[in-house]
Amino acid sequence: MNPHPPPGPGTSEAVTPQALRKQYEAGATVDELVTASGLSYGTVLNRLHDAGTVMRTSWQTRRMRQNPQARRRLAARLRTLYEQHGATLTELAAAAGETRRGARRLLIEAGGTVRTTQQTLRMRAAARAAERYKVALSLRARYEAGATVPELATEHSASRVSRQLMSAITATWNIASEQ
Image (cartoon, rainbow, N blue to C red; front, side, top):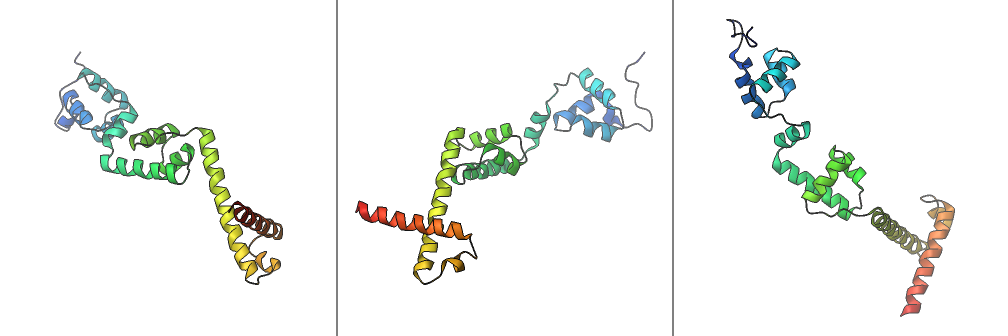
């Protein structure tokens, strides 16, 4: 029995094992070959194996198809988010449409170094403290310009305004006493 009958008059030459192998090695996936040839998934796989095709994994296909410049731009953007904005690997993965592992790989490709969880927590705590201090100074300036606590509380809660004003005053005293 002939495992691969010769193509008939209505059959395309593209379904020969060598033709399938050529398309596969050019970057086509098995699913795309199935759609293009009209053959079953198993038949396409068998013909690829008959032709001696070295099969790829799905990530190898994605990497092969990916635009190298776009990948470098994405990696650079992820590195910026990670280093300058304190994003986590989970946040990078969501932004890139990747897995955490894929986001980590892109970060390393861009020359970034992966932080420990403690480093990320310290970085975020420092950023929150800087933001609170900035708000406190803004509230203090407006309070000293004549705004009342209830007026300031329309933007922030009254207890937060009081707390922020006290921290701004304390910070000013501490800076003045150090000089």
